[in-house]
Image 1 (tube, rainbow, N blue to C red):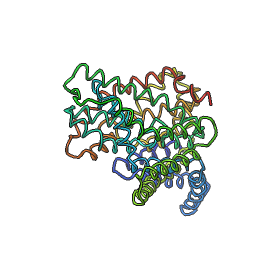
Image 2 (tube, helix red, strand yellow; image 1 turned 90 degrees about the vertical axis):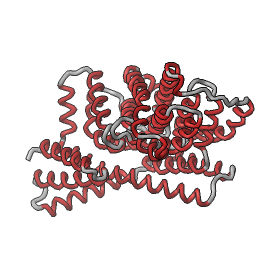
Image 3 (cartoon, one colour; image 1 turned 135 degrees about the horizontal axis):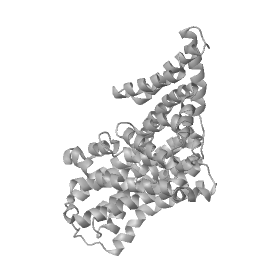
Image 4 (spheres, rainbow, N blue to C red; image 1 turned 135 degrees about the vertical axis):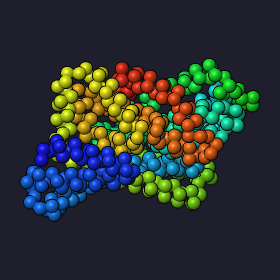
Amino acid sequence: MDLHVLAIGGVGSLLSLLALRVPIATALLAVGIVGLTIMFIVLGMSDTVGGALVQTVSFLSRDTYSFIASFSLMAVPMFLLMGSFAFHCGATSDAFRTARLWLSRLPGGLALASIVGSGMFAAISGSSLATASTMGRIAVPEMLKYGYSKSLAAGAVAAGGTLGALIPPSILMIVYGVFTEQSIGKLLIAGLIPGLLTAAMYMLGILIKVYFDPSSAPAVEHRVTWSERFSSLNGTGQFLILFILVMGSIYTGFATPTEAAAIGAAGILIIGLLRRRMSSDSIRRSITDTAKQTAMIFAIAIGAKAFVGFIAFTGVATDLATMVNGWGLPPLAVMLLLSLVYIVLGMFMDPLGIMLLTLPVVVPTIQALGFDLIWFGVIMVKYLEIGMITPPVGLNVFVLKAAVGKTIQLEQIFRGVTLFLVMDVITLAILIGFPEITLWLPSLM
């Protein structure tokens, strides 16, 4: 049997299992184990299925353990814990309240505040789904209270939640860095300016929307004093200082990302205790939530490592990269093709699954074309951001729907994110056309 045929069969089997709603971790691991077992028999490394299976288990036990035991990957539970502590000590409410008081007098001010609040919470959570869920419970009812259209209110929060994938700390960036063996510190820093640019483009889209449709965001009559505005900074200033401390320690090289994540988690806990916002019950729930999320992410990573090992052995990734390079297509054309592929995949799959599924094929192609893998990491996360609000399976949309309940229909949320998808495409074009935007900060490290 030709190994390329085996690889194609493996990918087809994986897609079939995903279509049948088999959990992605299970599907990846199953295809990886079966594929490696068959491959060992085809290569003559074993005469029996049992012997080939023993070789497969032996290979995976070494490969997956060395991956999961990576010091760099320990940043994932630490950043998740930091975000969980931040949520339970009311950081989300503080962020939105501050943004609301400062921006409420602008056209679409509450929608603008939801973007800023999402960005602030993203800076201490690292998770798009957590950002969308928590902001959905706080910002959407506030906007509906003042007569905002349901589609704008929901669309702003669903899109704002995606900032959690790009603004550091980012769980996706960490996993990408471990898989591609790139500097996680540089990847996290590289996402800062693109993340701020994305937030700015979302806010520009809201201003344009409200200019042409004022009824979608009525003016807020409540007058806010300057003393209220400045006093609101007390709630967020501590967390912003902590974020600057964490990212500053990574940027200057004072601490590794894992060490900085531990500093951030401990800092948020201490702040919550000093402000009397953390109880023993909230600490327990934070740790439990972190353990569940970490287990889910690591399960997918283990399955992906098995599948990646299978694909790597077949050699199809390297051959595909050579083939694409032989087409003689301009690098920009290849990026446009990749953009289309990732946006389509984002319509149906989980972001982490998409990343781990495509990395073994895409990374050799990107390297053959001479692209910087730090820059491509940011571009890939941007692709995944778009997928998180793209129908029919935009995860942020469904998470937000669960948060708001029957108040807003699913189709209203998808209608609301259309504006932000347009702004995302524009932002993506800017980042692809001007790599310096992404690489400037990492180049200074």
